[in-house]
Image: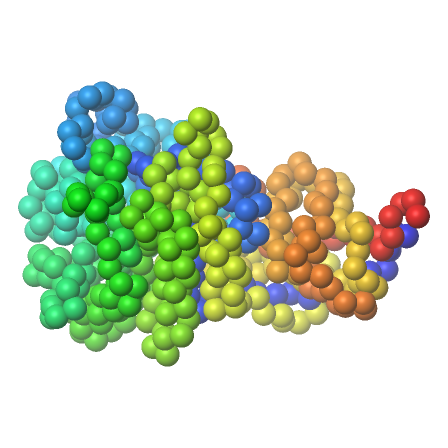
Length: 486
């Protein structure tokens, strides 16, 4: 039969940060962007944030074409031998518009209940007017994080080849100040080499970058358990040397030491610490060892009594090499080939330690206003649904004004997306791997991130931080415990 009385009560709930957030890289010089619907179906939950990687060299010849297309054949023995970085171009700013990239991807990420980390390598010679234009581009995207000129103590990016380390550091501080004036919703991430040897007392280029540590909102390092940096020009083999390998414990300790040194340089005051790129390279270790070592690293985080790490970004969802949960099918770039690390990672991110906390508040009656501050600060509703037994069919139906709503929903540990215009969502995948006992009450959590991916000034004085949606009617719940024909 169709269950019409399964809804028991409704209450308001809040979503708060995980003990350690999980973020995911999606697209880079090594792979194309994969849409969030596909990733959600693979991993069964949204991330705290999605990292998007772009470059901004508007003063260069060839801009705004991607470097590898603007200068075919110019690369030598490295992906970084082009005149400017071979990321996808940032098409906004003073010269561009907000109709292309990265804005289409940013909106896709935010519609699906995730914040955005925008990694942007940038020519330090751009003008203040160009900085202001970029800041204004980002004002409508809520609690977006900007990782500007990451791995700033390295030698490979174009900004490092054109400017001194002090100039790179000063540029970061200036851009941060511009953002605070024109886009205070943006949080900045400083990503340095950090402590690079266990016996080191200082971070790399500490004197030049000290002001960035004091200025930035978030501290970061990038770490790989192993890496073939010769990709795609060199296949990692025993008798060549453009790849490396470290013990899992070694990399963990380096990251933790970096955090402690950042804190010391910031006069003992803490800021959020993240690892902005992390993986174990299947080119070096093979796919089975990759999965095991990634699992080991996450276990170290969860078991460490010192809760020093606020987030970790896995690089990346789909990779042209072997640094992804999927690798790109060489026959068809629109297809990904799942690696063993994907199922391991999916299990990890469904552990309580890495999941956001959803806490119940008071029981409520319609209408209810939902607030979306971001993936770590949101107010939603919970529909308590009583199930007599394992369902054969379960779905939510959205009629009238609800059909145009944009919702992220969680049931039985499985997250679902409802796009504007969608009139029903099939909940049965929530029971494919996790069954329920008879007479079980399950919470259906519903949150409402912005349907077009943007916050709007018309919503009030706090529009840059929060998006609001009023629910005046609940979705219908259709449940059957037997097949239509028996």
